[in-house]
Image (cartoon, rainbow, N blue to C red):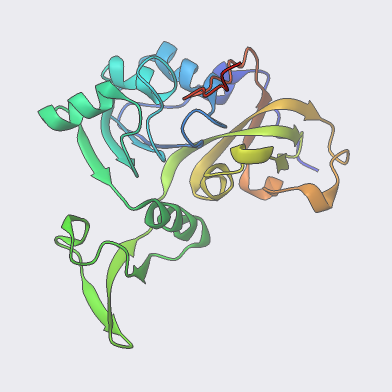
Length: 232
């Protein structure tokens, strides 16, 4: 069995270049590839197209890449809690393609499945549908959406083995599984890395065939985007 382990994040991202299209897993601040994002910051690569559900917050996650002006285009479903993302969008400094969340997820899944286009009713008759082909099916109008693929997909998992098999924990099983299938090179960072054969095959969410590089991450902050507590 092929050992896909690399010794650290520096080795995993050594061939990321300016102008590439990147997928970054996560939902809000949950299940984001923190180590990979920090390495992108260190490398200083620029003119990136980033595909992610959202862009985190101003001082964490993809928000840090936006602050450093490393992102040329964001393909996302919403702005979220990121004021800098909103500012760059409204000022025209950043090219932004917003998608209904389900459409974004399906475009990524289609990219991984090799399906170049599909039809969905979401967004028909709105700005989302401007310039897109539409077609009627059974008396209802649908928009044609195209697949999304990336040069690199960066995903975060709870456990992984040396063959690249991944298990996500809780809400971190969001955009990570589908993005893992849609990258030319998929890099997985995991909290716990175990030898091949130690994971229960029935619990694996992403088979190792989709993963090219895997490493054990470190120093996870796991921030909470909005903390709500009950008054005593």
